[in-house]
Image 1 (cartoon, rainbow, N blue to C red):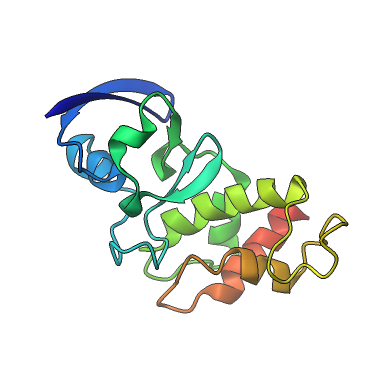
Image 2 (tube, helix red, strand yellow; image 1 turned 90 degrees about the vertical axis):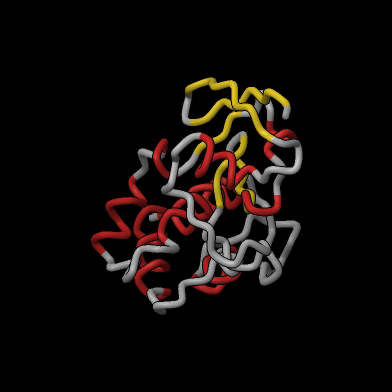
Length: 161
């Protein structure tokens, strides 16, 4: 066991865990932050997406020890207009993927503002326009098994407005 200092949602905590424990399991099982969901546990679905220093990561593939003293934000620490937009546009159905979708969308909007290109950006030397195709591509790492994609896209478009 090792002691790891995790800064989560603005609060520092020392957590005793095995070095092989994923950040997802540390958050859920050691810290009681169950808003971040365990979906596929293989990095493919995005249900476990959290923000680290403002960037999105899939926490099931990250070892907690790698993120010592970094700023981690889970859905419990989010206060963003996207949350209301998801409700307004029915951007969730069962809600299981919603926390990962919202964290991912927050970081995606920041990436776009920074001018980061995606796989569908036509001219990578210019600031990309945030089209529906851009949003869908940039959010493609987050899977909604209920099919609420139209509402998710509408919510992101509203906030990006």
